[in-house]
Length: 160
Image 1: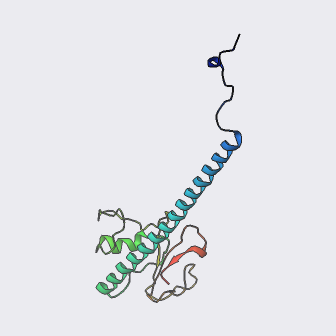
Image 2 (image 1 turned 90 degrees about the vertical axis):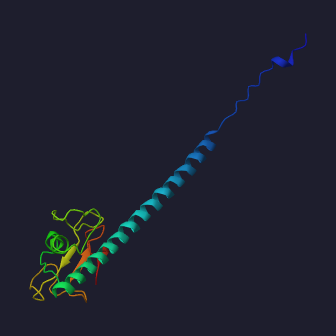
Image 3 (image 1 turned 45 degrees about the vertical axis):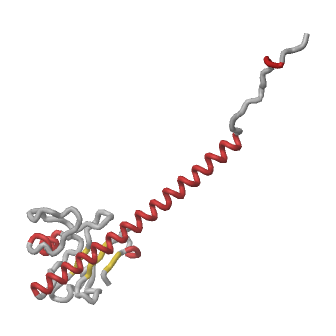
């Protein structure tokens, strides 16, 4: 009896080997890491750029205020932006930041990291023993800064 070739079954299975599967997973993991790394870097750069742009807007509003009234708004409590924002926003609408649309609300000027922008100006010139500054650091006669992503002084974004 001659065996029928039509009934022969091949026992060879096709598919991925473990090495091939691990290589594909490793390549995908590297690509995902690159995407998240680049996205994180882009977000950090965008936050920094927004803070720089906001500080420029605030500087322009302070200059307009000075042109109108002859002085900068006095603020000796640098870590609370409601004082000087009420001068620039509620009274004159010189400063408008993202989301500000109601003049009856006292807004805070908040940086991209959720902390108030810092503004210090003492009309007398200096207050001895102040934590923030004994003299204004900038050529503008006031100090304006953001603490940046960390609260250390190395990543502050300043006007001086």
